[in-house]
Amino acid sequence: MPTLDEARRLILERAGTLGTETVELVDSLGLVTAEDIASPWDMPLSSNSAMDGFAVCLADCRGGAQLQITGLIPAGSTSNHRVEPGCAIRIMTGALIPEGCDAVVPFEKAEERDGWVTFKESIRVHQNIRLAGTDVRRGEVVIPAGAAIGVPEISMMAGCGMSCVTVFRRPRVAILSTGDELLAVGEEVVPGMVVDSNGVSLAAAAKECGAKVELLGIARDTYDSHVEKMTIGLEADIFITTAGVSVGERDLVRKVLAGLGVSQLFYGVDVRPGGPTTFGVKDHRLVFCLPGNPVASILIFEELVRPAILKAMGYKRILRPCVRAVLKERTSKSEGKVKLLRVRLELGESCLLATSSGDQNTGMLKTLLRADGVAVLPAERTSLDAGEEVDVHVYSAHSLMRAPFKSSISGCLVKLRYSPADE
Image (cartoon, rainbow, N blue to C red; front, side, top):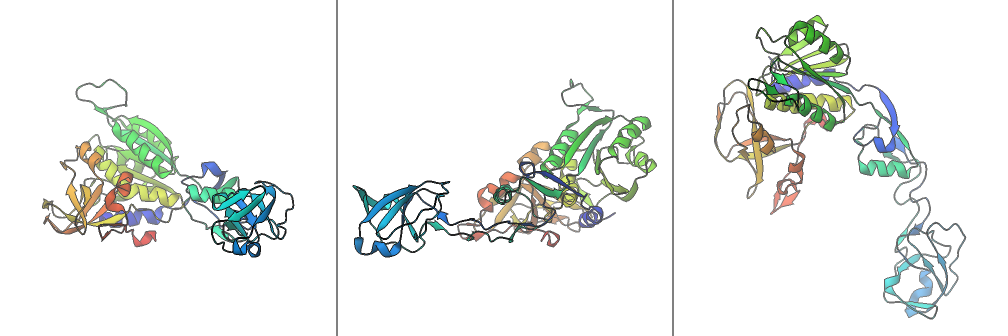
């Protein structure tokens, strides 16, 4: 049985990118560039005004001189203009800098009267002028291959005149729930039955990564039902099942997958919750069999499945951020397995503090809802005292925006760390 870190390593050794595709620029958000992107021109292409104001020659502005206003240059004008000696031209933001101009003075810092203008303050050379090429030079690689595409990247590519971009392909992820006790979301709830929350929650988690998701519904506890659904699932790049992975007589998942040609690489991980997790491969396809418990399935997705999806998409940074935090209270655990303790984080006087987000029973979804992430408690320990430091994997996006994660608060510097494999 591998450790949690060993299981992740075994998975990532077999996760690879899935080829490339060209997509519309607006559809590339969250994907990863498959090639270097170089600018075809200088940015700005030509020197232009950063303000609405007056285009002037600095030499004409000494000693409070009055300058005659001789024209207007609107943004988008392609006419040739020139600032003649002793003159100024009105110019709008983004308009081309005319010949003879080496500064732009904002309207609010000028006094205009009867076609003449004087200036209230001293003027600096090139003030309020965006000089050609000061942002990007022609041929400069502005976005390297392997970069995650966010809004700034899309803005830069649009500025380079691109309407499409070549990216690593999104993986297809198929998700299958198993068990006679399950009801589809929306069905009438009856005693003895359980709503299948795993399917939609894992689909949402995979979509958050950027994957294309197919929900296969529920496989009932018969061999034929499993074979029918799993044959379809194995057409995807990544196939995820939940429940039916233990050793009961109705736990058919591993047996059926073996019959369909899936090679099992490990069964069980030294972690709680989520110990029965199984991983296998068929050709280039990755197969994850997660526990049926909703809390366990979500936590194992975060720790093992999410990194594989992101690596398949070409991401270099594939793990959630990790912070060091001090336990506020004593906690105990069983020896021999890593424990993923759901915690809340808060800022102490000089460090982050971690406290349990509630009842750690694996059936308590509310505790996961309240958590900022999980403290990773070592396998060899049976208890940790208040005041001990632990690693916390930060899951919830809103946690990164809350006060403890700003770079500096009350003199306390908090840094987000990543695995060396992510750097």
